[in-house]
Amino acid sequence: MFRFGAKHFFIGRNFSTKFNDINNLVKKNKVVVFMKGIPEEPRCGFSNAVVQILQLHGVTYDAYDVLKDEELRQGIKDFSNWPTIPQVFINGDFVGGCDILLEMHKNGELIEELKKAGITSTLLEKEASSQSDVNKSKE
Image (tube, rainbow, N blue to C red; front, side, top):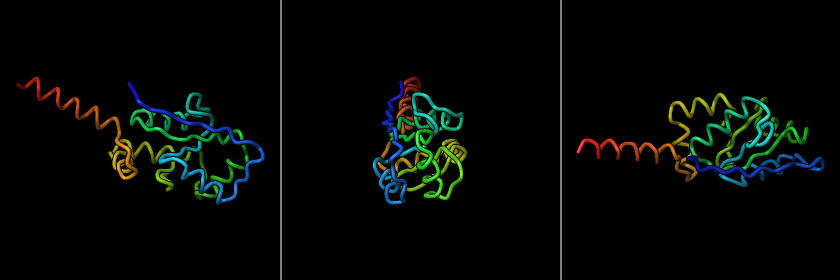
């Protein structure tokens, strides 16, 4: 069973995408994702992959649907100097998009990055539980 949660926000047309406003958004939670759609209904495969990776790690995060506001969509690209969506921020720092998050997941760097933010990946808990089960079976 996965422990995860995602708070998602619908950004209104009157949202100002000044750098200070976006800076405040990326610092509202330890993990923040700007994506197409919402976690329950991603609107592109890359956004879906990011959601799946964060679910595997049991991460609670804020998600912002850039399809609801073109100014936010362009504003986040300008803010991070990264041309694509989704975009993932941990502790207010830009981590990357889908490819980077996937690579970090595969090589274990994501677990370390989450640790720095004070988040324990549920994959570590599962690994510890599996190791405990192996040790018990050897006895």
